[in-house]
Amino acid sequence: MKLTRRDFLGSSAATAVFATVPLRVDASPASEDVLEITAGSSKQRLYRPDYPPSDLWTYNGSAPGPEIRVKRGQRVRVRFTNGLEEPTSIHWHGIRIDNAMDGVSGLTQDAVMPGEEFVYEFVAPDAGTYWYHAHNRSWNQVARGLYGALIIEEDDPVFDREHDLTLMADDWLLDRNGVLDVASLGSPMEWSHGGRLGNWLTVNGRSQPEFKLNAGEAYRLRLINVSNARILEIDPNRFDARVIAYDGQPLAQPEILNYEPLLIGPAQRVDFLIVPKNTNPILIEEMSGDRPFPFASLRPVAGGELKPEPAGLEPNSLPEPNLNRAMRFRLDMTGGAMGTVVETVYQGRKLKGSDFSKTGQVWAFNGIANFAAEPSFRCSRGETVIIETVNRTAFVHAMHVHGHHFRIIERSGSSVKEDSPWRDTFLVGPNQITTIAFVADNPGKWLFHCHMLEHAAAGMTTWFDVV
Ligand code: C2O
Ligand code: CU
Image 1 (cartoon, rainbow, N blue to C red):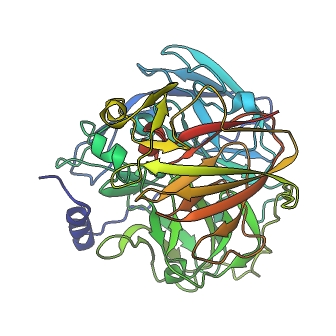
Image 2 (image 1 turned 60 degrees about the vertical axis):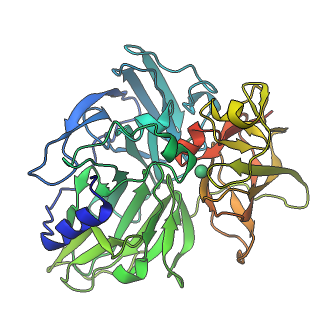
């Protein structure tokens, strides 16, 4: 029998041992520096100390890979070496980047072959919380540990290094020995249902880490969901936190949530502001299980300096969509278990029934499974694009637009406030319609796909061209 989340939960609740970990910042290069990042295999323990380590694929020997921290506008140079036995590339998620550096194997670059190198060089225009991950066979490579944090600092950061924590949450599927279950990777069941769902959550590659804070001082917590498919359910009011940014883009004002839970889909980020009032430990819990699972904790210690609360973060300046003069595109999402099935084109051929299922593809966008030779749409640079996503499947999806941030302007069944926050990934529930708008101001070929990585591999990937 496989360990289930509940088994893990039960054992952990009984013996919650939190190891205090240091803050990690691994690389803050100067402008002229070149960061070396190598993908390779390494061993890392994911579960408790008395369990064996797992065989992972990592950047520079650990999952997450080095946290890269640079200033807004600073040039980032990474010499990437592929030490894996399969081709790969690095995508810089959420960055409004030069298209040639977007790192999408097969669209913006050829995959980097084993033993070969690729130099990434870009300037990030927006301060905020981003991340990087493998973008070839991502369902496999990200599941095995190929990801890291990319933090772009404000010109004049509101929170200093000691008050700025990154929490990369990952959902792993462990076998009964507490090691990564590799045999199940690529299972048709995962591909046609809700994606690969795990049974254990780590933060920064560790089990239930504890972070030491000073009571009375204000902290920024950058929570990044790097799971293949798990939607994290978090209730910030349980730990007195306010939201200060979504998907890297700061809010003008910290926000107290008036609903719960807050859903954080795969690839999404939420930054929280937290000021521990006293020295009571603060648990950060994931709420989707039978009972809250404390996947990280904060331990405030006395002696902090009572300081005035910092001013809010300064929003980045993004071009505002013009809804009155926009190009409209409708994306019809079909397929998957229990979903609407349409006649589907895959690799240029029209397929029906069992001929389609034999391809291993299960989902489609506008009747096309996966990359087509032609883009879904073309638009000209500077044009506002409105995308209406119509989810005719039985599952929720986490749709990600490369190279741009958008606002959600309409969502069936719930109201959307004007000037809803900028995002780069949005959730669309079964039978829901969600409409987004953005200015296509970044020329090139941009991917638009579900960030549930099994769904992306099994059909939910398309692209558009800004010319
Ligand atoms: Cu993090 Cu194509 O995405
Ligand atoms: Cu999906």
